[in-house]
Image 1 (cartoon, rainbow, N blue to C red):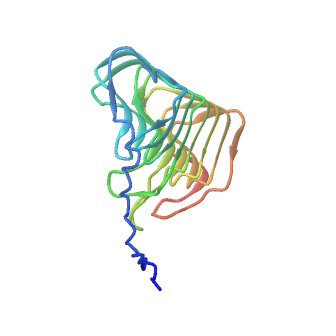
Image 2 (cartoon, helix red, strand yellow):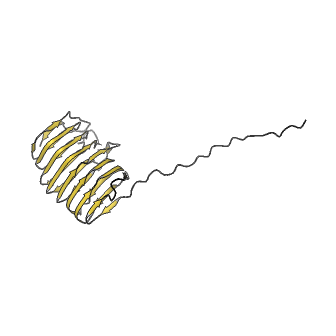
Image 3 (spheres, one colour):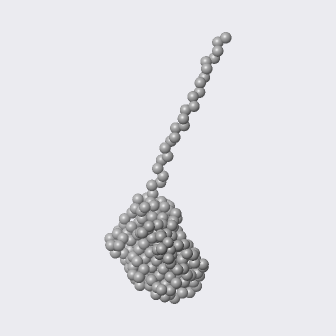
Length: 241
């Protein structure tokens, strides 16, 4: 009897298909002149963890940022130190960032309907001190219907631990806040050096929920429990310098 041919099956090793690179993120933008960004507010923006999404440079009579949805970036907006900005308006920005949300100086700064949260923290080291909204100089700052949460930093136990939701520096003449919250930041929720006008504001889960350097006229102001995460700072719901 003739036997049928023997069929031999060899098990070959699986061929691994190399994974393609993940989304690289949008390259950083450097803008000058009259700025309106983004051109299409309906497209979510994936940033790069080591880069700001937008940097303003040079002479800028006016800049309008938003509406925009941003994820993955180091910071959404930075105004370079040498820039000259007339009016800056940020409206409708929602962002999850690695370090900060907005760092700015201008003749006037208006922030509306903007919600920023730091993800992947806390940061560490001598320079990566995260701030949600950091305004270094302006004749007036107005912030409405916005929130800045989770901006955290850590260092050695014998150092002051920074990381603010909102930081308004001494180069600002006056600041007004309406319906704004700043929660779960390492240092202050609101760290305000000029005199402030406040209405319907709240802060909780920060070391110093409200820190005032020049006083404030406040309407409804809600402070929850403060939280110390480390370092040498003393914590309080309201801290007056």
